[in-house]
Image 1 (cartoon, rainbow, N blue to C red):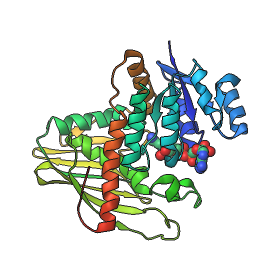
Image 2: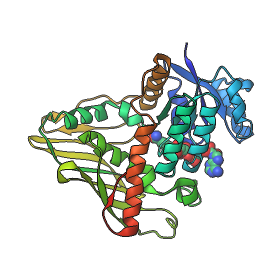
Image 3: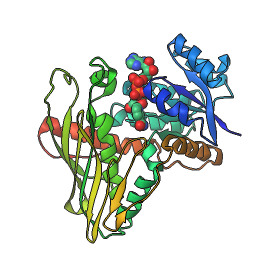
Image 4: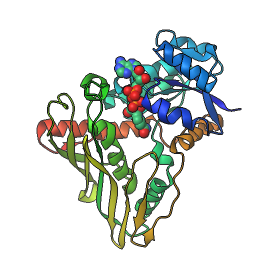
Length: 330
Ligand code: NAD
């Protein structure tokens, strides 16, 4: 049996990526939606053949507990709403996928993990790149030291924000922060899984060239992430630069991805030549893997704990911006 997924929040990512990906999944399908906008309920219901009984709004959402068609709730809302909807979904007896960044801060992530444990439900974060073969290759090259030990590492992710100046992403109470939370998170986890280690401390600085647009949130941040053995990985995030790479120099050569973090078009090479790895439907693989973990009662490779690890780094980066000093992670 295919598991039923209900998407909560029918914005750009749900409509542009997740719903189309769910047309290509083997272990799960788009069974339901949760939306505050009746017109969206109508168009989605017609487009994806979703029965009225599987359509919820934010008020009656908890009654999803009585709906056997829905096995997994996928939270695709602004960051400030991730905690509430993850916990409500788990309490309604549903397994949960929550989008990145997992929550506003590490403390909220811990509450979400605990709530899902208490409800005996599985929790996963929408970390699509853990299912992307270039990134899986980078994990292998880095962690198994295929080209020797990693000697230098730089990861960068950003784009020039040209969107709505009133969007939730630019409001701190809704987003928790700017480009670091939205884009930098991929660069942080890229360095973590290249090395296969958890960072110990971080020092960060920021630049702001558009203070009117980025009144409440960070625009560009540079960080130095310390791992054991005094190894420093360099990283940066931006809403004002088109960055997207992961570059490692190793004892015997190099490996790199660029562009590195998109939904497709990822390309990579090593000192031995081009990677020649095909692009895949990342979100379909990600959701199929989680459904398979639920069906087979196996742990997901991107549990809530993985989201918490990135949030601990992000919290420490913001602390370092405030203190001007290196801050411990944890
Ligand atoms: P979006 O603004 O396009 O969609 C947000 C949705 O939430 C909209 O449908 C909106 O109506 C709804 N919503 C409910 N209450 C709201 C409120 N108070 N304010 C604003 N919107 C409200 O955003 P998006 O780009 O789809 O991002 C949604 C989530 O998905 C975020 O957590 C984001 O980080 C994540 N995301 C992940 C990826 C990825 O590659 N994994 C890509 C894009 C977005």
